[in-house]
Image (tube, rainbow, N blue to C red; front, top):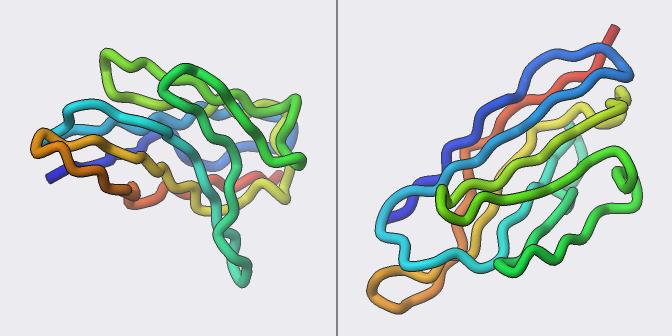
Length: 120
């Protein structure tokens, strides 16, 4: 019913920047909160940043001041601007969205993940 398609991952040197995008499509009436999570090898998935439909944001302590989450509601898209990247930011990044569907139900969806590797 709803697909989340991520893009923008890749290999970057320490100190570099990347911007991730996640576009939602399908039977969408509106989208509540959206967020980015990440999972490094051998570790649990963790919240990186979240944003409400009204634009209120929250961040993991490890990324505050370096990452910025924002969204374009008209495009059902959320972005994650990542600056001053560190090797410990290396992980698969997943988009998540809490979607109000056309049938008035509400469900959570995940993207397929995009790899971010920070290495020299």
